[in-house]
Structure formats: structure tokens, C-alpha cells
Length: 202
Image 1 (tube, helix red, strand yellow):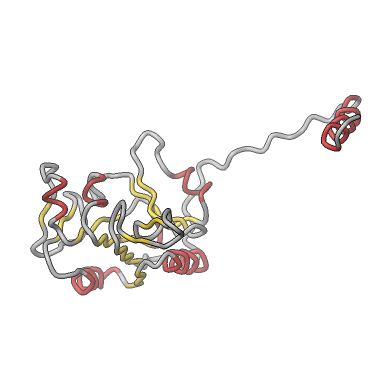
Image 2: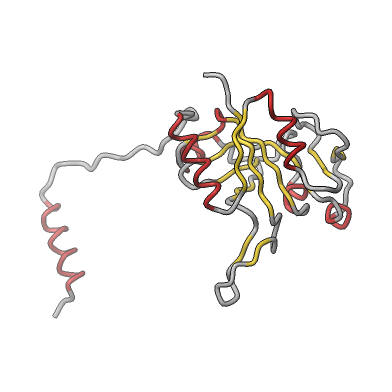
């Protein structure tokens, strides 16, 4: 006596036995350019907000003012290659300890890419994003994402990202529901994620 699975597989093998048709290979998506279509940008902003992150959209000439308005009171740290000037911020030189970073209120970084379908931001820790610790320890992370860095989905992101670089994928503020499904934020990283989506010329 055979079960249904065995019988179905046997029939498939029997049907394929005399077939001369070779199944076509589906190529993995590679070398895809980022897509910055308006609907993709809208979806990215919507999905990031779904994770309880704060999302703002602005023009390039508004970045500095928007960052200043969004930052909480207290000290701010920035990576050494940040392209935006943040007055009074500490520029991370790699020597700040975890305890010192824990006393810093916020970090401002840029991103390598944003993924619309999942509302995810990916950092590859280039100089404009800094080392992983500065994006994980301060309680607020303000991340600047340009519209031309947003791609539609994960395969598009994989095509753009360098697998040899360290990556941090961020989907909303750090949170867990491990204990009785009660959501607790700020367990493994910043409790507040503020994303500034900056318009780019098309």
C-alpha cells in the first residue's frame, strides 16, 4: 500500500521518463539597477512606517533642517563619512566603547539601500554609515535614504549589495515579542528609527 505522495511522485516520474524536453533554468536576478519609480518609493515609505518607524520625505536642500528637528535632546554620533553636517555631533573614530555609545542619545547614518517590498534598510557599513556598533547602541537611529537607493524587492537588493561586505538589515525599531507575544522595543538596538527619504532628481 502506498501513500498519496508516493503515488503522485511515481506518476510524475513515469510521465517524465520518455520526455525529451529539458526544463529551462531560471536565471537568478543579477545586475539589476535600482528602481526609483514613484510607486516603489511610496511603497517603501508605507512599509517602513508599518514597522512603527517614523518616516519623513523631503527635498535634498531640506536634509540638514529635518535632521536637526528630528533629533532628540542629548549627544549625537555620526560616522566619519556622513555627507550631511550635523552641528555638535561626535564623529566616530572607532574608539568609542559600548558604554560610551550607550550614553549617546542618537546616531545619524546614511544607508546602502532601501527595500520597498519589505520596508527594510540595509547598511553595508561604508564610511557614510559607520561601524555596526554606532547604529545599534544609541537609542535613536536617524537614517537618510535617497530615493535612488530604493529597490523594489529583495532579489533587486541582493543584485546590488556586495556579499563581501558586512551588512545590517533593519526593519523598524529593534523589537521582540518572545515573551507572551508582548511587543518590547529597544531590546537589541534603537527603540526609535527615524527614516528620512530624500528626493532625487530624475
